[in-house]
Length: 424
Ligand SMILES: Cc1ncc(COP(=O)(O)O)c(C=O)c1O
Image: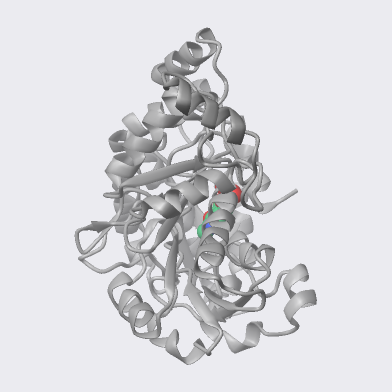
């Protein structure tokens, strides 16, 4: 079972009826919220007898690109495939070699660095900022070598990275930027949207993310050539003349002859990462509800921060600069010394508040096997992955639910105040 499978587990079990009737209901990380519009669009796609990408995927891509200030969005079947394809497209178009290096934060979901390995390249880790948990831009240059080709800043939990300095460093060293925006949508940094800074931006619509299509991802870009290459790469590397079953409709006889001669031709080493109209229909409906979805998350997060403020001696709460939005895919918390994170988390879970660790990465068994004992070289990532965790603040929760969460924290600190102060 992956961390992602875990993420969906209890979220899926929350019945809408339970949401409406219980007072202290489970505070899950995410929620499956299939509304009237989602059902309407999915039924329409089914009634049209069309499963391969068509009207709904196209509309979802166009609206998503527009919302993020980008010319193109390419839908695919996960955030991981979006990232893998984005890097593959740059590697192929820029002529990068196996063994070339890509900078990634030392604290992120494992897919960010896995996709560097899938591309035959080498992830080089950079420590993160102790307050925002995003890549520490002041440490990036020390990790650049003659083989560095790209930076993948990750907008963690809903908060954009410091894209101005990152862009300047990339320009100075001739590096490409791919944004891992799998946890952040619709958020602006100094007035510009995530997904519009790098050569390519990558998003996820997996369960418990901001927009949910079940499985799914998107790649945004302003570069039409890169977009076409990505479209080909997600469809087995097929000749771009025929990437959709609509591509041989309404064309002249000559064009049809040309298409027939090339439509079973594969010109790149591609993958099978397409989505269907069903995900497109869900995605479009969710996108049309974006204000409800993001707005309530922000209200919940703001309320929770206000309720938890009295416990700041024990808890590090989210903080972010005034020029950045935060889309609060999750609500991150760091247990300050000497609070015992495990004990606190167990208490929360006993009170039906779902938690996850804050992205231990370099201590993962598979990475210890691959890279050895390197976590100690990244003290902030190490601290956060040992002391950090996150809880849900999704749009089907209310400000009253957040008050309940704060009451549970208050109980914990009241009952265990002696232990927290180290009086054992
Ligand atoms: C930062 C980050 N990158 C990449 C991914 C991968 O997305 P997906 O699960 O859609 O493959 C996730 C998923 O949770 C993520 O949080």
